Structures are given as structure tokens and as C-alpha cells.
Image 1 (cartoon, rainbow, N blue to C red):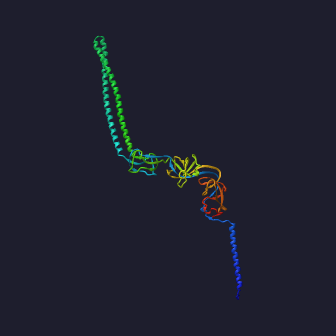
Image 2: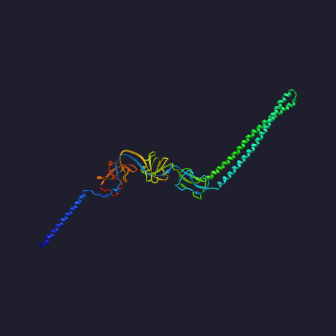
Length: 422
């Protein structure tokens, strides 16, 4: 087939037409894309698994104040030295659990040991003296009782002789003068019996007094020995009650005077929760409100309690609230254990509420992102909030039951008209 030569002017015209067509197509594409972006809203895209989404609920809303705190003993026992001495050894450290008979420290005091020996010697001497006094007094008493028996026999014989001679004297067998002497002897013998009886009675009173004095002396020395022994036993200082050692003030080699500080013991059975409530929420807390104390053990351990005291002042940026706990507590509960407390302030019977969004404040208005289009997009919605709880907040307007909103931080796409959720 023969070749035809295309003129240059025709080729240039063809190329111009093609350029014009391509330029027109490009302009149309730009206009179409611009129109598309103008008609359809756009926004950033976020992954669903990076968001925290909550659903608006309707019903009773329990207003709670949440605050961190620690467990504190309602009472503490300060152990002091009941006797002076030098600290030989310290057997416990802060945090150690102890029982009533647990030895905290051991003291040494040679003087107390010598007092035990002295008191024992004095007691032995007093007992020996008592035994000797008992023997001497018994001997004297027996002598007086023998003398009384003799006097009674003499008096009885004199009385019988006088009775016999009375009849003989009437028959003039016995001289009247002899009879009178016999009567006088009988009276004298009877008087001697009375005198000996009085001497014996007085001696018995004296014997009881002397024995009482000697027994009191023995008792005094026995008490002194017991006290000395107790003082020696007190050199091993015990806790006095079950609990946990909070602090130890004594150290080996230290000389403690009477009443010197040794340790501080916190009871395990009388604990309270000391919560640090934010001043903005403390005004809603009053004594008598119920509380739930959660142990920070990554579990669901809860202890029911009652608010007993609200501090009238702010200290270190918070208000101290004391919660009374039951006597029986879960295993592992101890003083200074970190806890989280929920205080039940009030309950709103019928209202809307949702998990508390980040930075949401009570009685305020805020913008939250509501999920629409089956959860594929999120749009900003103006919402009015009411009362707040520990992890939830009351919804007064802007949302309805069943709506889903983003409650995690939305700062990365704040102000956007639409957010795509993928």
C-alpha cells in the first residue's frame, strides 16, 4: 500500500485538538472532585479499637463520689518500757504482724536480777522467822494451858475438901478455924484458875497478833519477790495485743528509761478507710452515708462501710473522709493498704445517664461525638450534663436512650464535622 505524506499543518492541528480534549477532561475531573468534596462532608478516620464507646441508658442513677485513700487503724497502741534497761535486741520491724504475746525487744538490767535474789532471800528469812515464832508461841501456849489444868485440879480438890469439912465442922469433928482456912484455900484456888484463864486468853490474842504480823511480813516479801520477777519478765517487752507493727523507736544498745517509747502497734480488727475527697465533691458527703471500699488487688473485693466523719478543712488539696468498716475484714487487709472508695450520695429515680466522657463536668454543656450510620461515622452533638457519679454522668438534654457516644479522649479530632470510624 503506498505511503501518503500528511501535511505538517494537518498534523499540528490534530495535536492541538488532542491537547484541548485532554485539558478539558482534566478540568472536568478537577471540577467533579471539587464538587464532590463540596457536597459530601469529609473528616479524619479513626480505628474503632482505639475508642471507648458507651451507650446512653435510662433509669435510676446512683450519684457516687469516688476517692482514693488508705486503711488506717481506728486505734493504735504505743508500747513503752515498764522497767528501765538497755536494749539487747530488737526482734520486729515495721510491717510485721504480731500477736499479744509476741516479744518486740529484749532488755537487760542486772540490778533487777539482783533484786530477785534479795527478795527471795528476804522471803526465806521471813518464812523461817514465822516458823520459829509459831513454835515459840505454841510452846508458851501449851505451858499456860498446862498451868490452867493444874490450877483447875487444885481448885477442884480445894472445893471438895471444903464441902467435906463443912459437915464435919458442924459436928465439931473439925475445928472451925481449920474449916475456914480450907474454904479460903478453895476460894484462892478458884481465883487462880480465873487468873490463869485470863492470861491464856490474853496470850492467844497476842499469839494471833504476832502470827498475823509475821504472816504479813512473809506476804510483803512474797509480793516483793513477785514484783521483782515480773520486772525481770518485763525485760522481754511484748506487743500486748494483736496487730501490725507501724514503727519501732528502740535500737540495740539504747538505754531506755521507765516509760521510754518502744513501738507503735495498729490493730487489725479495728480499721477505717481514710479517703481523700476532692473539695468540689466533699460538700455532698455527710456522716451516715453508705460507702463501698474496694481493695486495690485487681479483684472485686468490696467492703461495705459508713461515713463517720468529714473533715471541716482542706488539707493538701483534699478533704479527709473517714469510713467505718466492719470488725471482720477479708484476709490480707492491713493498715496503710491503698483502697478506692465509692460514697453513695443520692439516687435519681428516672433520668438518662452515660459513662462519664473525658473532661465532662457536672452541670455544664459539652460537645460529644455520637455514632451514626450504623457506627461508621461520628458527628459532634451538644449535650447538657447534670449530676456526676464515680464513672457516670447524668444527661439532661442532647441525647436519648440507646444513643452511642465516644467517651474517650476526642482531642485529636475535636472540631471536625464528621469522623469516620473504621
